[in-house]
Image (cartoon, rainbow, N blue to C red; front, top):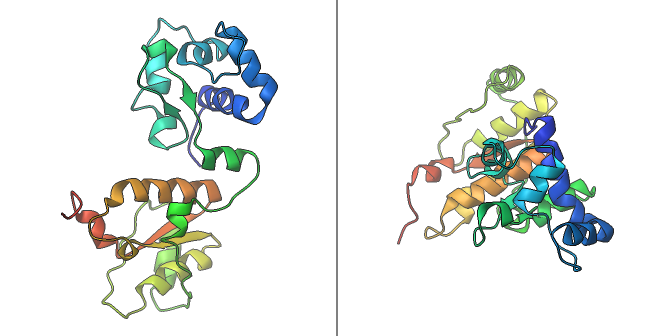
Length: 208
């Protein structure tokens, strides 16, 4: 779902392993010159993944624009020099790796359960989803069947969907980090994302 290659999967595994196994975190501490449990540093993770620390691969795989960080699967501390910075896997991603799939709390507050029912356009939505269209915009007046159409399209395509309502957030809340969490949540669940009142995302900054 996240389109990670083998090296990115290795780095994610290295970053998560210490939080899932106390023996691994102790080994990381010993490898970093400490007797205490520790998370892997950028330098240690690169070495364990077989990547040269002097090459540009480290920044490409773990830098701000790296796929793992864009998807919210991995975080890198900022206080230390680059190779000494620590890798952290968010709790929600750790839970998924461990086989637990409870909704991210912030996403759960926005989640809704639409009632899908077929309308004439349901087949069009389903065909687009099956064809891999990444973004569909359903324009529907308030009180109409826009949300039901979206969810019925997923059902007709035999796909899961996670539905959230952006209007559940106060106008002062910046929606961008919440939508990033929702997108990650949908991907972890192997589902598509349906956003009601998505026009709020056009706001470039939160209202005062």
